[in-house]
Image 1 (cartoon, rainbow, N blue to C red):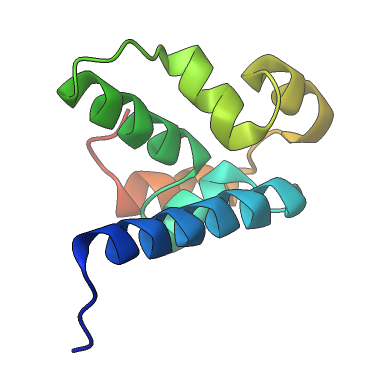
Image 2 (spheres, rainbow, N blue to C red; image 1 turned 180 degrees about the vertical axis):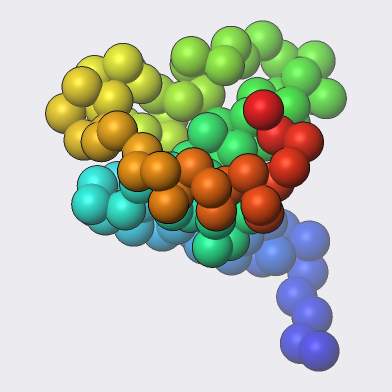
Length: 102
């Protein structure tokens, strides 16, 4: 496995994170429930991980602030513009893949 110094590794990881966030912002057609069903995480999970990382460093970052970073806008605005009602099939798949998530 290729290894880099700590700063280079940090910069590469940050660049990959920024690209992932950019990709998720562009793919508004992909619903969070589909991400959860296929990959086991969604935009909200990514936001939560960011808020948890900030908290671990003693930094204040609310769930709403973290979501705005990931979504590129307030979460409620993203929901209004892009979120569709989950189908019964999507809900069933989520219940099967994440039985304890709700």
